[in-house]
Amino acid sequence: MSSYRSPIKFCRNCGTAVINRIPDDGDTKIRAVCPSCNTIHYENPLNVVGTLPIWEGKVLLCKRNIEPRFGKWTLPAGFLEIGESLAEGAARETEEEAGAQFELEELFAIMSVPRVGQVHIFYKARLLSDTFNPGFETLETHLFAEHEIPWDDIAFKTVKETLTYFFNDRVEGAFKLHQAVID
Image 1 (cartoon, rainbow, N blue to C red):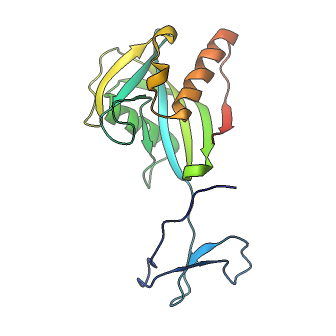
Image 2: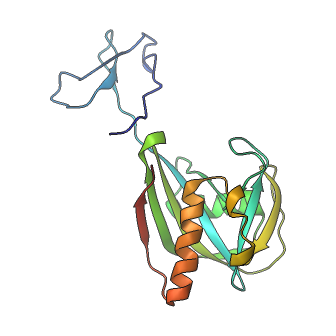
Image 3: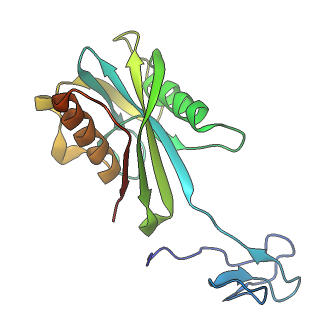
């Protein structure tokens, strides 16, 4: 069971304070329900999309210039925007955070993070250059060989898992799609 709790306090339609209860429509989950206009507010996980950019066996990481995890290393990733496909969002985030030139490759990892109501999705990406122009969310970018990865300074568990999957797959000589639930 998830510890994530709905932040909805007021109806998006009429502004009345909502009540958290099981709706009368046969639903089985507690939802934010408006006692005035009877709107049921459904919340769904947010999608975080990004890439695992590779250049000559090294992985591109970005040092975060924003919270959460300011100053920690991450893969280029962020929230999917309305109107984007998963691939379009991953590409946009890679361009924004790393300023990288790349070719998007196959879907690599899908990780559910129920505790925070998110799903993290990473594509492999083949870098076309080792020159980067990071955006404002990134302090610096760096290409790391496996033995150089700053494991203790990785921002998020999903990034650490994705990197681990990549290096393990590389040793095995075959890349596959990884799925996990992260606590």
